[in-house]
Amino acid sequence: MRLGTSICSAMGSADCISVEKEVEDKSTTVLTSKIDGGVFFKPNRPALVMSSTSWTPDEDFSILLEAALMYDRRVAATLGEEDSMDEGQLWIDIKSGKQFDYPRLLFIITGKGPDRKKYEEQIKRLKLRRVAFRTMWLASEDYPLLLGSADLGVSLHTSSSGLDLPMKVVDMFGCGLPVCAASFSW
Image (cartoon, rainbow, N blue to C red; front, side):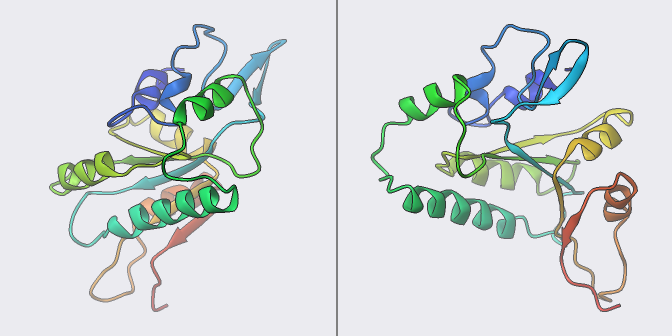
């Protein structure tokens, strides 16, 4: 609930997550609904993918941006959608809770560093329908909670030795989060 405003605020024009921000019900988030005292995943919730970074050249986020673009285009092609499709109907369907064959993806990238603005500008230029990105700095108490709520972790850290496992991956494993990572020479 504390992160709701940050999660629902699009980095550019409206996207498949920001369209839900008009919900005034305080017992509902983009991911969950509170029903009879219990908290449950929404049936049409986006898959939450987390990545933690120091936004330095040893983490190439263009890999993740390209993968997101490929996913978005492949889903559109599978569904027979054209680039000229009116997004308005998609936003209406999302707000109404429509179930989709292919989930929306919400990428949350946490951290501070010198390359952050560069990648945020690239993200703003992407024209994605079913994928959304958020970059944020989390309070120490929110970081493990969000990791524990995610469906997948991504680590793009590389090193000259190829041997060091980043602490970010250790944090993800500690929360029970499966991780896709750059290969390491163990």
